[in-house]
Image 1 (cartoon, helix red, strand yellow):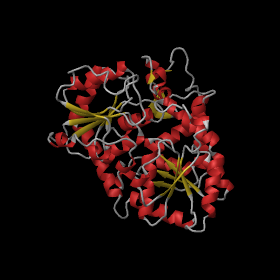
Image 2: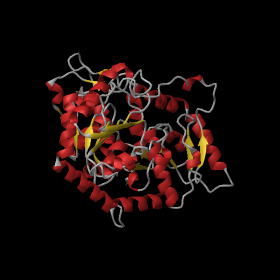
Image 3: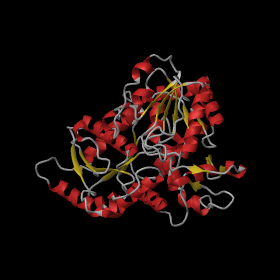
Image 4: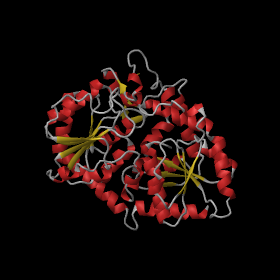
Length: 454
């Protein structure tokens, strides 16, 4: 799926399988296409949106929640082209035979295509097991009324930017009976509606076709989500393989944006655990009002910071036009993009203020860095709740972007030894899982054996 948070884990998985002796062919769209020169060991086929005269794919939103439109369109119109390309691959006599097809779970149309060609399809799920179980329960949550947005609990998507602003309402603080981990406002922040919702339809098809697949590969770990894994193994009768990709390969070579490295000399000079790293991923957008709250919260926290502000992150701005002159001082650095895993692994980084996308969340845990969580929509509120209330390795900014709450959360995470110790212990468990006999090691070996048997 052609977005950074989906490209990274797929190419990490491809590298893992290549290291185990498999030949890899990557199907990808021209939109957000990877830099093929970084992967001379893979074969790339660009499909679906190759026709420059095909108006169906033009002018689709690139950022915020609107970016989901492209996922909808690719599934709606891509089946025939995917079928034709797979048929061509299966007929090639000059290459090894195709063992299986592995697709991002959101390419749900790939399952009936694979079935029609008698080709085993494995699914890569780029979010958590907890998220998948919640998504699978959306029909139940809809029947119970959780997805109905009444006048008293209305959520509005602000300017289509992809985040949900909720009014203060004590009712929204109540737990979801069927998912006690979640609050009502977490369900609303997901941004799905019960009726006539194209996003909900994609999610429903994703769940259905994932269950119909030949196996599921998760970018996760048993050490992180053992209760959820037990439920998955009980309810879905296909093999599951949990692999922490960030522990095997970095994402530097799959970055769609040029990575700035000029800040590392400054970062090297900072004391251990003294810097807040801030990044809201590759798609999220924010309006100027909330951006300024972020600015003031960072300044008021009086902590050093490294802040990734993508061009176009602030709605209506090219880059930093909304930043007040002289306000940031010398305490921090702002860059357009950064090699995130390398930053999180740096000894100077003491906290990660994140949008709670799953890749960022899991990378933070893998490096033992506690989090300040500011989710936008989709799986992000679920990840934030799980990190703050279940694993207790982060602080969830539940009331949006308010400068005093931001400053307080940053200061708390930077000094809270209990949070820091918990995330450090999780990192150690993940490290141990990679050793022979560990759950992650065995999961990779089982996946290799399974594909080889197909």
